[in-house]
Image 1: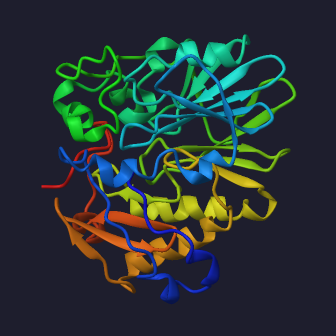
Image 2 (image 1 turned 90 degrees about the vertical axis):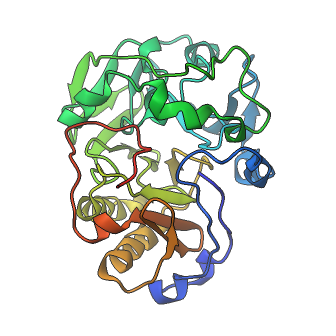
Length: 340
């Protein structure tokens, strides 16, 4: 997700003041050839460089130590800037998302911990499940959407994600850009809202937060004040335009997360930056309310979409969703589909 202007959000307290504060020009699919320089100048992100960089043998993944036992694996050189998180307990480790699938992620994870690894995805868009097939067990929520996405995504849907302009320094060595696809995977265990994943010395609570997708989840470490938000919140352009998105459910899910904010130390989002202020959850809730009510005016984008700027983040949605139309949420989706 492309960067947006930072720095004005903290000084504003009302949604009326927020609207129009930031400048945002999101890309809704991979950038056109020749545009990479516009976002590559921002990576590595300054916000990420504030954390300890961990040396690994991979030339693709940037690894940062966010907290004791918490590593962020950042794919900064592809425009999605996807972030997966390795959370380590005393008995086992959990990998929250497995990235784009452009480069194997398991060897990096195994450099960071010798413990048994299980996987949970924040949701099943392509850029979060790319490495799922490398692991066993994979945990998943039980929705028709999740089941449909387990087949993997074909090259026809992902070709734009590996076009020349999608990379900062070219495609990773050995990647077949002419045939790139994600592999099929199957869950070994189903999980649900409120389930606890005990890693030994660290307990993680699963929170279902449908909206961005029907199968979106957040992950809460109450003892340490950490909330992994997936794509429900990050400090950039939040994509809420695809047919499987449900704006009403998204607003309700943000309500659930806002209630947790006073006890949180940091958010750990799935794109761009590896830490965000928990106070931004309330601002995001106010923002989606203002977007849905028509209180703010968006800027038209291609593909029947509108973008609304709110300082440290913006919201990219679609006219059909704002009109109350609903897509088929059982068919699955890569996260790249637009409305006709």
